[in-house]
Image (cartoon, rainbow, N blue to C red; front, side, top):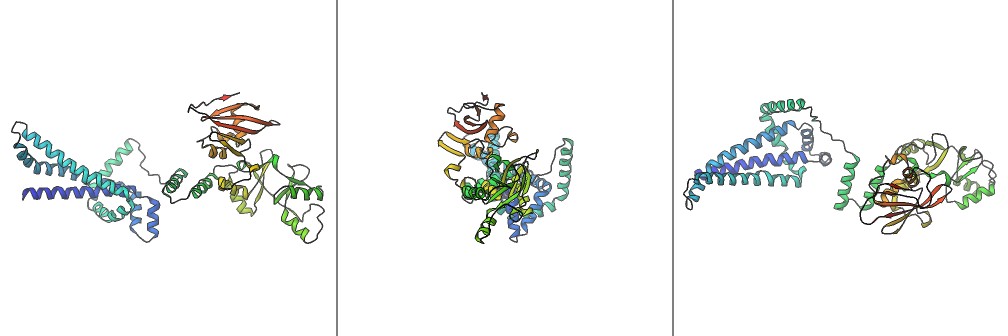
Amino acid sequence: MDLFFNLAMIALLILVSSFFSISEIALAGARKIKLKLILEGGDKRAEKIMRLQEHSADFFATSQIGLNAVAILGGSVGEGALRPYFADFIGHFYQGVWLDNIAFFTSFVVVTLLFILYADLIPKRIAMINPEKIALMVIEPVLMVIKIIKPLVWVINGLANLTFRLFKINTTREDNITFDDVSAIVDAGAEAGVVLQQEQHFIENVFELEERTVPSSMTVREDVVFFTLDESEENIRQKIADYPYSKFLVCNTNVDQVIGYVDTKDILVRLLNNQSFVQLNESVIRNVLIIPDTLTLSELLDKFRASKEKFAVVINEYAWVVGIITLSDIMMTVMGDWVAPTDEDQQIIRRDESSWLIDGSTPIDDVKHALDVADFADWDHYETLAGFIMYRLRKIPRPADFVMHENFKFEVVDIDHFKIDQVLVTRLSGGDEVDRDWV
């Protein structure tokens, strides 16, 4: 009967210890996002869990009191209960002076293994499988235990807080969700098959709108097609026919003297109504949104929403026009590779497994995605691949000049009036990264 009682006591202590172990992992590992979804589903226990996570000091103090008290009691009960039986069993084979020590050591190892396996390891692994579900099951009894031993918890927390202040340790928990957190969740969802590959691509690109500036997605100055006030009707018709644009800038004599823009739909309506289209005037010219080139794409979206416009002129600090951008350009940035351009419009052409032919005006973010490059140093000093090469070379490049970066060779192959037109990018073999510039 004594053996049965002692074994029952050990089993009870293991159960109590396993309760504290499984509660500790489940309540600490329960994810706030899932808890909020459970709370929205009507389960009020989720709110108690989130409140306990915000003020976790009482819970952890209670958990440690329970775990340590049970461990000490279990060792004492287990060693005293099992040692005589081990001594009797071992005595059939050995009757030396070390018999009592061997029996003590054996009982200690057995009890320790039982507690490690069934009171610690297995409960914690179970809690890690589904922490939210386990947390919902244990939250009520945990709160009850905290209330019962509140005075002792208060004393222990006071000593812990004194230690934290003494060593100037910040105990405030940061619960802010960053882009890296969301990206990790999206990646995990993609690996699990919950998020489709294109959905993952779109989500990551949407977050990049906060970092990418307007010049990374605009049509550059050299490619802007515009009308002048004295433009002939024949030239206007020809430009509309030659370029697949729905909006054209209207300038006084040059591109820096912006007056507004015209929508080809307005011109088409006049032609369909048999009205003569003689010159550009107030009836067809619309006010254009002017923005600085320092805006991010996210900020530009806000301006488009506020102004009800979908077309903007980008200027620099000297009030020179550096390009134009539309709402469609931003959407193209979000869609990325899933919008297949025509061959003649492609800025990045993959030649084989280890080389690419890239237009010098390609935004550096697009180059990063295409080459799977982690980052470009000092990226805030340039917007395009041409800017990166010029920044690294510290001069106006010539054909055959190149720079090395992250085991890639960026070689200038074509220059057009000092402008880098084409760059040949080659992945080097052998894995030896050379990070210096060659002139």
